[in-house]
Image 1 (cartoon, helix red, strand yellow):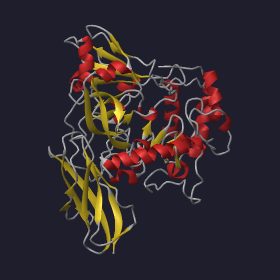
Image 2: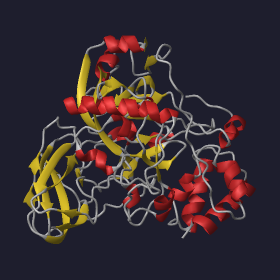
Image 3: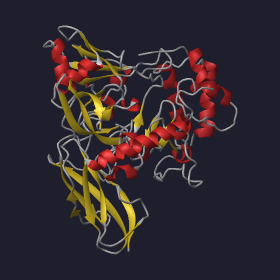
Image 4: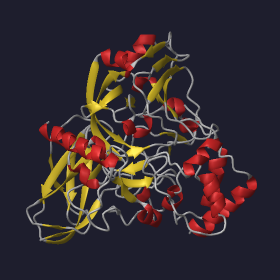
Length: 93
Length: 405
């Protein structure tokens, strides 16, 4: 029911919604900055760890597209391409 | 139920302490849960035991939105304690609700009128109790081979509680339904972070809404509904998977059209004709798929973990459940499924509840034990996974390797 702005939600990076949310450290590799800046606005990054390393390249492409098309994530095409590459390289099979 | 009361007393005091400071783990590995090797490797390295405020340490799959699974040892009794009950949210904006200002609206184009209820109004209505299993549609998704994307649950995205509340049909009587109402639609106070994300809205067919045991519940195991379980009121849909059990309920809408939200039209769907299910949600059918409805017959061995030793003559035990027809039998095989022996069923808490079972193991040696439940309408579990894209309805027989000494 309630919605808050994407700008406000960026604060969740440092002030987690749950009192005991721990920072999730993903693999340090090119593109991680885009993953952190975009994906973690709406969900913690353990969603990525949890769904690995089984996804094929097509499955990661579909996952990012779903976040944009079905869930309305405001990610531009350039960032989406970087995020897809990062996921395939670091959390794919 | 003295056991239940004692548990609640203990858990209440433990929870109060947990919110102040967590005690140091007794061993370096205390924060690592016992996870099935069949889960994706990423889960096995990222999942930790973690306590949400007011909860026991559960298996954390995701922090935000919180998705926390119940460790198997809590399923050794038919009732799952509130503070060990699994937590599942789709969207991360989860308000703390003030019961004094909370209101539940009832209306819609299929209703003759409108109503707004306070929590006091709800509690003043005739109260009903039902013991019922709430199981996530995707429970055991992480065990799918090949793996499918989603929250990678092991065995514990489920629990059984005694729910108390008002009948949904009594609430709908307040406004009256038109003859052409096809679905009742529910919305909760939780929502998305980004306003373009579809709000979590779900519907059930009118016939299911009017069943005597479909409740708007405000108590869980004798306590006010805890925050993470939908305070101050949630829908209870016995027999059907947890996706319909809307938490933090704020809106009930009678509709003359099938609900078209993302969470009905695209999510929580199973292929047509693949599962042996009775209850259907036909107003939502497409040529290819249909909404998930009742739970499939299932069971779990809870007394031992894989690789354990067990003394000859001591009992293997667990729980069984189904979509609300009632468990007729649980059988155990000690030879990998060649022969089966009937287990003794425990107390019957009603057809929607976990049914405990046990069977002493006699033959010594290393063996593969399996459990297989059957229900009163002839349904049973599958030996081979029924694949489906979203990873629902996993009821492959649970199997463990044990050494009887």
